[in-house]
Length: 445
Image 1 (tube, rainbow, N blue to C red):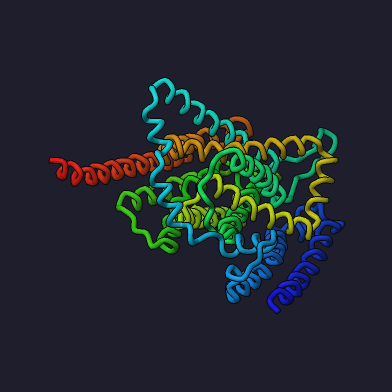
Image 2 (cartoon, helix red, strand yellow):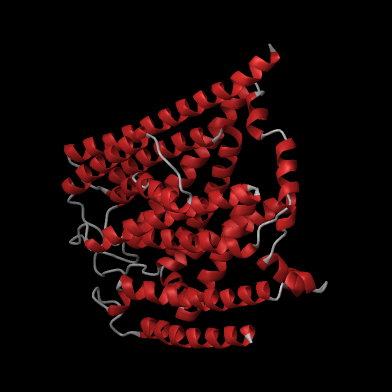
């Protein structure tokens, strides 16, 4: 009965989404700036309806399989094993995986034992890999979303409007690379039910979509500063999702970041897209949406890491699997692939930009996991904080964004707060380690 209900709901949701999506693509006024199909609320609604065609039947099916305890009666077939893996996983093996993980020597300890020259070389590779991947990714992101393709001195061009297609492009190559790494490199036994990745996958899709859409309303430097201030919603989500408590310095630096961002935004008169559109309420909504969804993603993934002890590459594969599934279904229903393909044929340089964007996103994710594994989260955060500063500088130089003196001061306050936060966190960790070492020393004496 649940399976039948799932199929019926799938049909009920797919048909209107497909019709609306085709209407959006065939709208004769589609090129007009005020076309209803270009309004972000309409696109967001279509996207969410598309995702619902996966989530609603999937929820009913998961509830049904758990109710009948399908894992206890499932046969040996491929589909049966897949259903068990998606809904139940191998949760009984969590303790074994945790014990195996505790017996292995961490990559960070191995790196600490290497000579200084080798550590410096590996760190340099990580630094330039992260900077090169994400600086290129950021500049291309701004180029794709804020500049007209095909514009000449005699004719106007057109903007690429489908942010969801760019999310798909970023995720599909990352998923393929994650699978290749899992295939060639030993990984701990996977225990988590696959469906649990869909929550962080959805929030990751939404944060990326908001990030692309925001560039239609705000400048790239504004977006980067908003990312830098995401520690505020991260703290909020940490309290809600994980019931965490925070130190005084964390609240102080959060206030500093808020002040710095406000100084920049209130003195910024930068234009975006059509040059007469300044930072708007829609842009603010997009930035807030990005920060909220992104902070939920990190907190949810942290809970999964704690509970199931999977590797970072397994997390990368699981999240990108559902991201590809959700965006593919939604794009098919709305005719997004046809729309993007037609745009590529009209503007071949967009195809080149999309491929490079996908490569940078995938390699950047690999550099993230490798840097954290070799040098820890603090080193990674410092590198990425520097990347944000470089991104603002390059964007202002290449694309000519004006910045006032007060705006520069605001940027300085933001990055000062970030580095204070990094330093205080590192000092706190060092104190904890020294306190933990005291009982061990007293026992020896």
